[in-house]
Image 1 (spheres, chains in turn orange, cyan, yellow, red):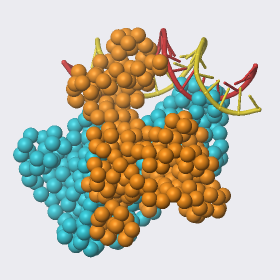
Image 2 (spheres, chains in turn cyan, red, yellow, brown):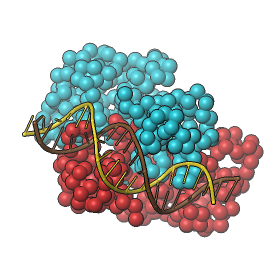
Image 3 (tube, rainbow over the protein chains, first blue to last red):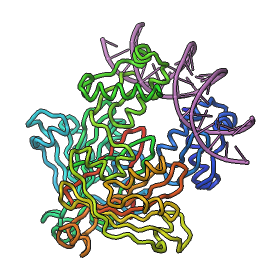
Image 4 (cartoon, rainbow over the protein chains, first blue to last red):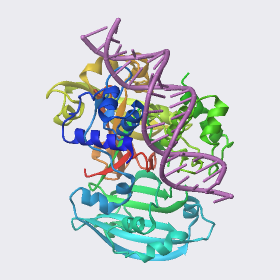
Amino acid sequence: MVLHRGLADDLRQAIARGALPVGSPLPTEAELAATHGVSRGTVRHALTILAAEGLISSRQGARHLVRGTERTQSLAELRSFAQWARGQGRQPSGEVLSTVRRPATAREAGLLHLEPGAEVLAVLRLRGLDGEPAMLERTSYAGWIADAVERVDPRADSVTDRLHAELGAVFGHAEHLIDAVAAGVRDAALLGVRRSSPLLRARRVSTTPSGRPVECSDDRYRIGVVTFDVHTTAGGPVLARRAP
Amino acid sequence: MVLHRGLADDLRQAIARGALPVGSPLPTEAELAATHGVSRGTVRHALTILAAEGLISSRQGARHLVRGTERTQSLAELRSFAQWARGQGRQPSGEVLSTVRRPATAREAGLLHLEPGAEVLAVLRLRGLDGEPAMLERTSYAGWIADAVERVDPRADSVTDRLHAELGAVFGHAEHLIDAVAAGVRDAALLGVRRSSPLLRARRVSTTPSGRPVECSDDRYRIGVVTFDVHTTAGGPVLARRAP
DNA sequence: GAGTGGTCTAGACCACTAC
DNA sequence: TAGTGGTCTAGACCACTCG
């Protein structure tokens, strides 16, 4: 077991159960090192992880402080609508409306680093929450993974879970572009909203740990269904405004 | 000068000018340590920063790889509309529509950790980009910083810059909630869009490095003006879906 | 001025990749 | 099997906070 991970887990649990309330100081790094029988470097590694999760903050000379109790979600949870919904105690549903192999568009070829005209597997899914339409997901998988995607039951709650189980850790990195759009005719009909009403859009490109693009997606949420939550600390910039 | 920061800057520049193209491997950690005359620990610290910025990725056993050329923005740039616009080569403008001291609403008191009824300074600003209305910003400053805010010229491009200059590093942490909303009557008139057309909304709470809330804000962007960009790596979860 | 976090070093061993 | 990154240690010094 990795020591710094174990220590981070311990502290996260202590924060979650209120033993370390929000606003209170953590033990000093030296104390944590002594009580857990590890070196100060390992303690600092664990604290860095908690800081990146938005749970603690630090200033030179003063103790680390507990800043929050809720851990931001993992990459896997973020990519999987079904995992997220279940974590919220809600009932996810999914319906595949179409599946087609076709040549990549110019945009897809660029995002997925494909030759122009290479084949992609395009899947359109309507996802629901507690029986209500919630999100429309247009995903294009790179050709090299298309067979694996088609092998898994497309009606499965979470294709991501299945791919993970079949192929191991497929994803290592993702980029999301978040903005708002007006619902088109088709969007409106499928999601049960009026035409040109607001939708929250998240466009995503996922890659393997070695940087090879796997899939790109255009997800459109009904308003009120989700909010994206971003923690930013002075140490770790993670969110950027962009010109479209 | 901090060594790991200097090394990170060097590598960032090498990536930006193409000396280390996207997809290519970096020198080994041992090589970087030798050529820059620092220890391997310092090299790893620098590489951790670049990874958090989405510029490089790594796998055990293989070399670090260059993944992108564009650094995500710093916390300061993210909070300041004017800084962001200038960085894009565009002309920011700003107009304060109203400034009022009033008791905090229940929501504000909760977000800013204030006593019910404590005073806040509420500012409504219309921000423009190249002369066009772009964003409507409703900011509430906690009472303890209200005087400083009122002292700076409210017509200044960037109140954030001025506060930073006057008070030092005011901000240490921020949380953003991003979703979409329909424009209300007032929003629509000020931004020059039709009523109930889509707007991208970012709600923010900023705190000092020690965790004291400074301000909360509700920013509404015309669509097409900005896109939020989030990098997620397996190591560092930073974005979360949330139920509203 | 004592305490505490931020930075840096030097060296070690292990797990994984690539050839 | 050699190379490389991931983890951990022990110790040092500095910058900053706080009473």
